[in-house]
Image (cartoon, rainbow, N blue to C red; front, side, top):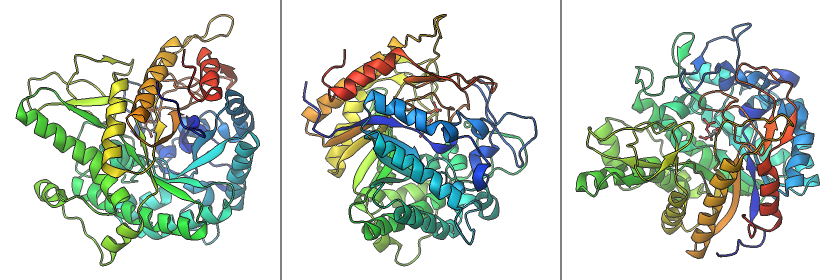
Amino acid sequence: MAAFPQGFLWGGALAANQCEGAYLEDGKGLSVPDMIKGGTVDTPRMITSTVHEGEYYPSHEAIDFYHHYKEDIALFGEMGFKCLRVSINWGRIFPTGEDAEPNQAGIEFYRSMFEEMHKNGIEPLVTLSHYELPYALAKKYGGWSSRELVEPFVRYARLCFEEYKGLVKLWITFNEINCLCAPFGNIMGGGILPPGDNVALDYSTKVEWDDEQRRYQALHHQFVASALAVKAAHEIDPDNKVACMIASRATYPYSCRPEDVLFAQKMERMANHYCGDVQVRGAYPSWADRLWREKGVHVEQEPGDAELLREGKVDFYTFSYYKSSTVSTDPTVPVGTGNVFYDDAVNPYLETSDWGWTIDPKGLRWYLNDMYDRYQVPMMIVENGLGAIDVVEEDGSIHDQYRINYMRDHIEQMAEAIDDGVDLIGYTMWGPIDIVSAGTGEMKKRYGFVYVDKHNDGSGDLHRARKDSFFWYQKVCNTNGEVLG
Ligand code: BG6
């Protein structure tokens, strides 16, 4: 097996709204996920137009990372993390998005968090927008479907680059930007809210407010905002490196029927290349005109946008990888379950997780090779992991060999990809400590090396405990991936 390069960034990844809690503390404003109640694998999350007293909203307390970050970062340090991916909650810095002055308490909270990481030998990788934005901006403008969001976002991004200069040099603009075109990211990351109160986020139902015109236009606005942020990051500190972040969709044709092969290519282009091309190559792909025409979408662009996208290219490519997808044009082919990509055919060669996601380590090698061939910039996996049900034994131990197996098999394929010539610089697995699931709002779907006593109904004393995987990953980090057994 090929060796991982010196300085490889082993670590984990978190999102503010899924871990911090303290949803109104120290001047923070409401953000979109604060309006979304918990669901389960069978019942959808509901979004409300005001906070309903006495009802359970997972982001309000989450795992209270806001008050536990020092002990949690110490645990990551103990595991030997070299990198921790976190996100800044925009509403802690600008509570309504358009405030005359930033919220100093919010600025200081993140400064202290980044300092704590450095004390533990951990490099921060910071996402500016991870499935959230100030609720006031979503309400007032219809989220990113309006170009009005570009200016407040760039102001917020500039402030972060200035405040955290010297503390943070690795940045991501938008998490899973390509999910803006899937119903999931449309609401949480796009801030395109449904009309009414208590609306089910039933991602497979197409409703009137959820149209593609709005989504593709919103995506263009995020591309513009991202390009402006990249330029600002470079100007404020030439050491800054900024990445795109794509929810990968390694796509296989269900059969060798040419229709299936062409369909897989189309899905792959829409899911992966559309956003990757704009953010890494600095231009929409050649087939975008036909895509828009066939969808009946018109993407309004201002003069100068094309030049801006060229100037605001990212420095490296990051992505999440949980599963691969299999697609077919044949309506009789059985369809499985997934999160954002709900039209997947069942792949008979792959097993699935408790939540129906395929488990496919080789798909990760395939994706790394495919994207590196295309973009030729450093690559980083910033999310990967297994959401599973953990059992706490009577003595408090948690034996999560299934999680170790999942990650070991994926890391082996990373090594293969490095041997294939891919410039892979890091791996921050998803949810190193148990956090709220973005898709279902559950705590039961756990990814962590560190267990948190918090449950689907909001109960639990929040104590932390090391799982078996904690000690396994400690060896991985400390041997630079040489010991995976
Ligand atoms: C990614 C998101 O899509 O998947 C994370 O960036 C999310 O925010 C992760 O938590 C896993 O999904 P889930 O639904 O299991 O939390």
